[in-house]
Length: 165
Image 1 (spheres, rainbow, N blue to C red):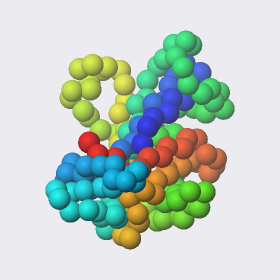
Image 2: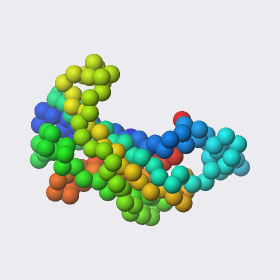
Image 3: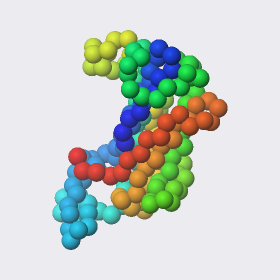
Image 4: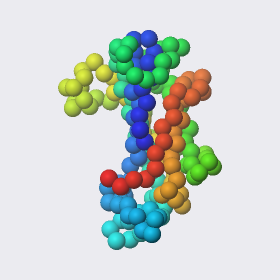
């Protein structure tokens, strides 16, 4: 679903997200057929997402230099309180049409990732898991995640659609 980098003073927040659903995406392949993209799981054509998907959002919070690329938001204070106050809105997007979909927060908080801690011990890693209903949603539709600050102001927008691994 991509990533976004936000600066606030000497702190930076890197946001990245991905969508999972068991082995569904692991086994998904795409093919071009008569100029049209088709999705397959094994030899079976698949046109819709599974009943539910899990959106995993990671936030990496650390000090950063002034030359880092990204958006500047000096009105924010990037700290633990800020990270626990984030809100989310999710949509399924088809063309210009955006349909709101409820997202249930399954997990939210700081995590310890031993592999990442060795690379960057000063970085706070936050993880959010949102369960999203996707029954009867075509694989050509995109999932849009709006990340909101405590005031409800849009902080970031990440989106993506099904792709083969």
